[in-house]
Image (tube, rainbow, N blue to C red; front, side, top):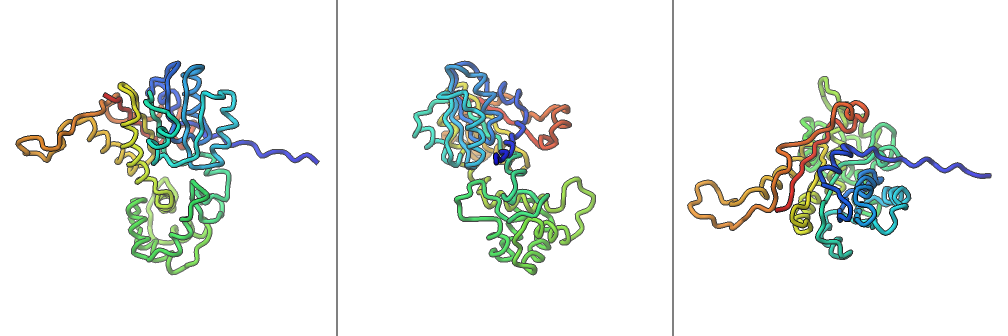
Length: 312
């Protein structure tokens, strides 16, 4: 009996044409895709720099890398896929002799694969184990946070990473109903925690975001990776970051604001003491967002915002 293989789930890349243009992808270029996912952006970059260009792709999720590897097999030695944390992007590039580079891409957030393949705990659409790990080999899970963290610590986490106004009520209710082992249980408890008013998103959305960020150390890893990217870019090399919520975008914006400025001394300092010089220039002022047609066809793109800078 021949068993049918499950169809591969490909994530729909957000602002695909805009990202390739922002990176100035050209034949013979060298690019780092720090968030490969299922390879949508990676494939477009490879198409633009093929046949003499190369791409180093990084992702923590072994399943996503497997899917991307199959998808991108025709590009052969033009692509090197690495399972690792982009917080180590500088060390990874040094290890593979991949510097300087003409562009670095960060497409943050989750992929359709992680949301839809099941048993990962990222979504509350189905009742799944509370996991939320990008890297299945790491120890910390959402279940541990939900069931082991003290109430005050849990509330602070929901407030910091989810910007959840009902954080105290949610934490109190969760602690009272421990153990909470599935996404369905947690989503139901959050919905019962208070009045959320008329909002477009599910009441549990911010809680799930907060837990996912905490489990995977997303904000801390992003800060480290942005700093390291500076040393990788060649002059006129581009850094492109696509973020999906205000916490990510705030980190990116502050990083860019600092690196496009000269002196960082406090206002009123008579003589510059920091010696800081600008390392980046803005390619676009502010953010680039998806066109209306893309937002309509791919609802997950609606919150996307892209920032682009160039190495001086």
